[in-house]
Amino acid sequence: MNKRIIISIIGKIVLTEVILMIPALLVSLAYQDGDAAGFIYTMVPAGIGGLLFTRVNHSGQRMSSRDGYFIVAAAWIIVSLLGALPLYLDGVFPTYWNALFEIVSGFTTTGASVLAKPEELGHGVLFWRSFTHWIGGMGVLVFVMMVMPMENDNSMHLVRAEVPGPTAGKLVPRMRTTSMILYGIYGVMTLVLAVLLCLFGMAHFDSFCIAFGTAGTGGFAVSSAGIAGYGSLAIEVTLGVFMLLFGVNFSVYHLVLLRKFREAFSMEEVRVYLVIVAAATGAIAWNILSFAGGIGNALRQAFFQVSSIITTSGFATVDFEFWPEFSKHMLLLLMVVGACAGSTGGGMKVSRVLILVKSFVAEIRQIINPKAIVTVRVNGKPVDKKTLSSTRIYAASYMLLLCVFTLIVSLDGLDFTTNFTAVLSCFNNIGPGLAKVGPMANFSVYSDWAQVVLSLAMLTGRLEIFPMFLLFAKSAHDR
Image (cartoon, rainbow, N blue to C red; front, top):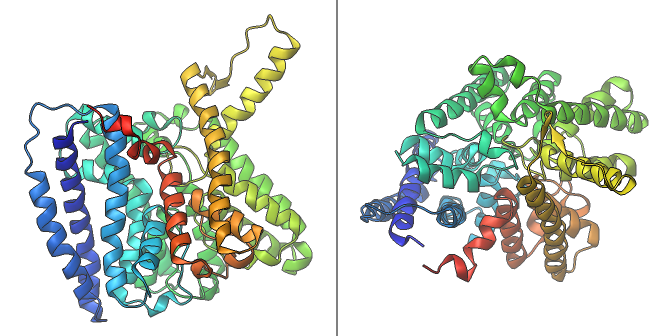
């Protein structure tokens, strides 16, 4: 393991986080809520430490693939540990572990919270809490590569480890300029959404915080009333549409900019994603018709919740805990499927589900006709054996870890529905679960140690399992 290059890049990551805290500090100073000190006490020592780390000489060293995975996992842990300090120093969170859960939920774009009344936070901390959604949505390391130059080979190792989905390598930047283009698309879409929310009557501060959460497909609200508190159909529809847009593979937008329209609009994953959204919206609207009080309200509620859950945004306008069992089970399935690969959404990803379904069909065909040559195709092209193998291994690991995390948090003594949906929500970076962690509840029902376990589940899910385990593998530290 190339320790010098790892230390140097970790230093760049810490410095980048300090820079990203500046807008929140300015908001704190503007509103004078008394939370500016927490940012200063965090930023000064972190900035000094990060600067010292960046000065470690690593000339001549090349980053390996395992170094990239190690750096990504370590970086997400470090930015979370540092990012939690302003929240804890604000004084609203009883313990540091509560603040850590909250900020991990922010960076991983989960949106699960331990706060019953987020409006009790200072404006700067509230801004930082939502801004972490925006940072984590596209990826912490992708942002670092945009603002700090890095060798092409090194950047690719980091990107492969951080950007989600089996086809993420085709999305990610191969050089700094492409990274800037992707963040440019991300930033413009966020700004357009914030402006629209302002035009529809949302306060300026709220509009930016909610836009950050929507862009990163997180789910932090700025008040206990949530999105329902605005009571606006225009706001709900706008958020629903933009959640779906941010759940699309960002390579589509990149291809559109390159004027490769045919290639952009022929992606099978995106078509399947939109079909799932339409089918789930129709099925849930039909199922909740008697609960919603009319077809209009049923479609409104179903569309928003389907958009929120499949993109793993986690916003809620109704307490779907009281919906019929069919609709709740439908939402649980959408939690597992998630958004597209290469988007800001979480979950297993539509592309993986598509590959697994096609693999199942191919296996049936192979059994029926053993002599036939059966291939799995996506976008009309055969899926290589390495991708098929990694997808199957990921799916098996995914199911195993869901069981293990649920077993561990069950030591807190809560019921199975609460525990399983809490783990499912955290592992898929969604936000709300069912029962005691439903959309109108929060995760304060769990003890500090259980919140640490759920934080680990969030990080493991966001980094798609393997980088987190590589961090603790002995062979990864050997040279």
